[in-house]
Length: 333
Length: 227
Image (cartoon, rainbow over all chains, first blue to last red; front, side, top):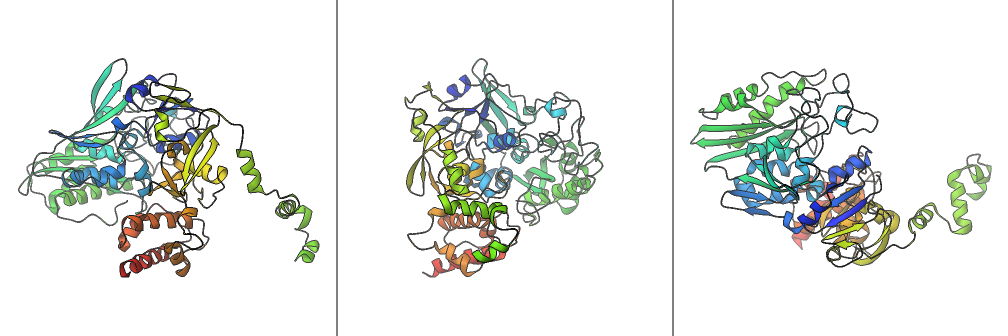
């Protein structure tokens, strides 16, 4: 890890004043230190926002939740209101990484963590996402990579929280000293590699993620998130699913189905959602939605298994959300 | 022993390990001692000694910003109930500060990426990976390491249970396992096996001692319940 200046800040204004000349934001530091230890980033200055009290806390408002970006994954997963009304979010945060990491990692950092592609994470490979012109994954080892929407880079979206927050139609508040605040939806937060391979999010170097806003689900909404990995204790997702069902009795008025490990940016599956809209939630309709979730998939040389795994993740998570099935013991985390 | 070594071609001056053992016997230098000494360099500026120091008028403080480093700065850490001042660069992890600067080598650095939890310590009783925590981020918090959970001259009940149940093989993951399970017992005196599994779900043991770790932890929980 390179040497750096640590600018420890106690207010948002103080932090914003430091965001120039290559300074990067550090909150929990889990993903940033990981990248620095791997030698793929060498920032001259870290702006430590960890001690900024105004960025902490989970607040219930008239319209839903406002979550401080420094809320840890553990705090979110254990929050009573989130556990009862936003289960998809407590599921996603409560099964990310390990219990130890969940005590340290912030939800803001989870949203903004970089891709886990092993070529990107290795200092020995200068790839497209590091400003070069070649992707090693297409012709190399790609068993954990994308099966949909990948364009020029098939590294998958790494954030479990994003899968949940997209399902809940959430947005983030971005603040800059010069331009003030703006609000960006979760999907719009991420930049697809074809648009700009080295810009992972729309956040500018002088901007700070200052809040996450989650609208309150309509009454009768049920939701869940599950992910599958190579091992059950903890793992990155090889397939995952977020499910939000607006129910009218046993009939699903409207469904939102989200997926993370299928594509470079977290996605909603319009096909899976259409398979459930206006239907009762049953074994059959859930399976149909699962199959629909991988329509148009184009697996790479080593990841065709994901085309079989995603429908299972989607189908089982729909039944979990609907209360027709327990959490899958073979799901990860 | 000494006589046999004289006739052993791998011993004596040609064996680096024996060499260093011989050196230390001669002049008191050990590898660990040498590394510790190398960590103690010149003094820096203002002492960083509490979360509130960040917002007070310490040197370099300007409108809620305190700049530290990149060189060594004095930092006050609270470890196992005692105060320590260490001279560290901001990039020093808590695990490195504990092992290299404070000589508390019970905390293990194995993966150094937050994947194996061998470096588990408590920050205000919460188990965290000290390898992915900057030491300066521990300022103002109570750090507890494996050296700090036992009472004077006796093992922590969980350590005793690990011995009783033979809950270790190579032992490298053991400090992290004990810290994870002891943290669980701090917040839940009678956990289920599922709770124990969950608590160590981030602790990698490649010898496969998990069943005995579960048994040892549940044993302590049982005795607490019966007490």
